[in-house]
Amino acid sequence: MSNCISACLVKVLQQQLRRIEAKLDNPHFGLGEIKSEVAVVEGAVTDPCFGLKQIAEGVANLEDILGDIDPKELACVLEAIQDGVDHIEAKLDDPCFGLEEIKVEVKLIEETVEDIKDILKDALDGRPKDNALEDVKDLLEELIDQFADIEDKLDSPEFGLGEIKAEVKDIERELKRLDLDEIRCALGDIKEIVADIEDEVDSEDHGLAEIKEEIREIEDRLKGLDLDDIRCLLRDIKEAVDDIEDQVEDEEHGLEEIKKEVKDIECLLKGLNVEDLNCLLDRIKETLSDIEDAVQDPEFGLREIKKEIREIECILRELDLKDILCLLARIKADVCEIQAALNDPCAGLAEIKREVRDIECKLDNPEYGLQEIKAEVRQILEECCNGNGNGPSDPEAVTSGPMFRANQASSAIVQVLNYFSEPVQVSIAVLNVSLTGTKQNVPGSPVTVTVDPDETFAQAFDISNTTSYEVQIFSDNPEWLRYWSGSRMQPANVPLTASTILPENIVLHADFVRQPLAP
Image (cartoon, rainbow, N blue to C red):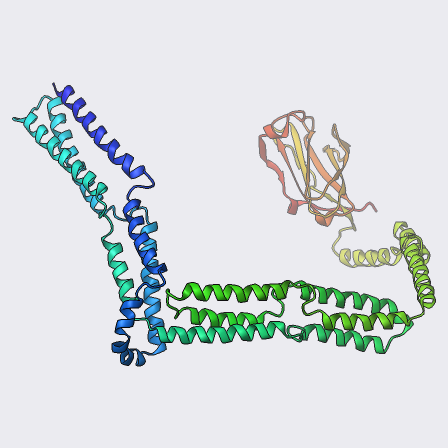
């Protein structure tokens, strides 16, 4: 039973909602009445006799009042009218305009549907209420009444037009305040302004101030003409002509006064009456058409330009063409020689190359410039070692010194890091130091590698058959190297990543000392 009621209820609601959606989705819904009202307003506004009878009857009574009206106040009135029109347009463009009452009705429908859902839910849960069917019937009848109200409002030609009519009445009240005498005066001012524009456009001197200045500069350059400056002069003439062409072709050039007059026209148009606006626009169109014809005329404003160009052509004809050609030929030959010299990799570089080769030979000579340095180094070493019992040390070699191998150590790791901006060659030696004092290289020692900038090198050496050992590092640039050594439990052939480091044989960078030189 409850399922049948639910199906019937859903069917009724769907039918009603489809009817409402069809009307709301119709792009022309509600526009018939609005168009009729707008047509009436447009017909009245475009009618040349609209409002003239009432204005004529009240002119005598309003002359004293209108005589006291300030133009600023009239501008405020027109601005208020424009605001009212904009407000109406905004409401007409708003897709939600006039839907406030519909929203209220839809909200009531939603509340009724929720009540029906609660009754049906209780029935399905086994908790039916007394007179549930009667309640559902009452709610359905209420829904049908609400749908009928919505349809009546949607079908009503007066629905949603209340605010528009109020705005139209406001506009009519503002239009009644306009004065035809002031409008006629404004039209007279506009005619004078348009006449001034026509005189300005028809003037041969209009808009040519910048062009005349360019031509005067060209004349000054031609008076001091010299054959050596012909090439530069021709380039300057071309640039000046290009500037003139740009100014002539510029649509905005010379229109500053016109723009100012147009702004004045716009200010006066704000105080016009709608009744005489059509006539005024027709006259303005005619005037603007004349202005456009004058501006688009290819002969307009070019009379003085053509005269100046003819003078330039006369001056250029007086020049000797043979001298110009000879001068250009010499210039071209000089340019070719300069280009050939610039393109020749050996031009002007012979002495520089000889000097560079001499410098390279000196730099490649290991003995060049080192004799005095070696003498100074020996002197410093002798002073540093004087009285301390230590001999001189090798500046390019460091050593860890002999150390006992840890009990569980099978191999020794040596790692070197290069912080120099260039590759550095490094030699690493791991020596088996016997108790008798003899030294022998362990398997894999020595090794010489090149370490790139900001790179590191590490290798494991077999020390399983040693009692004590020593690590020596040799490099031609030791101040940029950092190194350390340690022993591990794994053999030398095991990867370094699987190392178990023994702390007994760790030798840090600061623990290495300079290798003593042999006596």
